[in-house]
Image 1: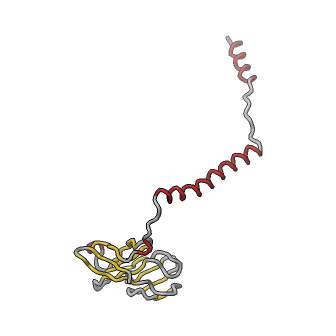
Image 2: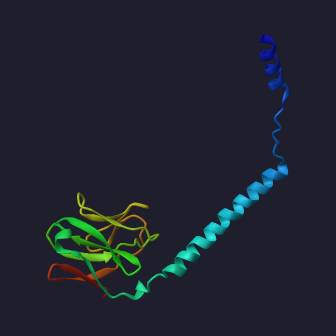
Image 3: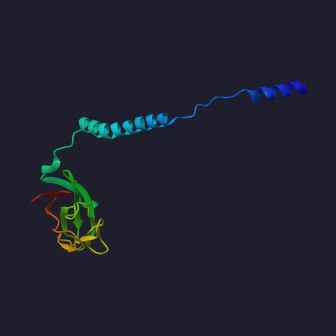
Length: 161
């Protein structure tokens, strides 16, 4: 019996499993196929998405419902969609409603309202605007574009001037 175990043990050692070592050519081929697939995905995905649902021609929009009146309490702000760009509607500490484009005039980052300080901030480069959209500090070269605000029933309606 000991001989059988010895034979079977020696038989297992005698068998060689052949594992093919990858060559430089195999590596380059695999890398090229992977890169080509990724490149095709980066090109074809946006194209397919565009063909499935083209962007709306919302760049010329003149009027939109920005929010419900109860969505913007006193001393707060809300970002809303105004065509293809964001807008911001504010209710100042005194309760007045104001609306502006939410695109910073410096490098087109989206601005936000800072209620603790009562100003509009562009966090990209620390640009600050007052509650009239005028530049307080930072790199923005121009004030924010202001929109007309109306309340109709419980809707805040914003109109481009």
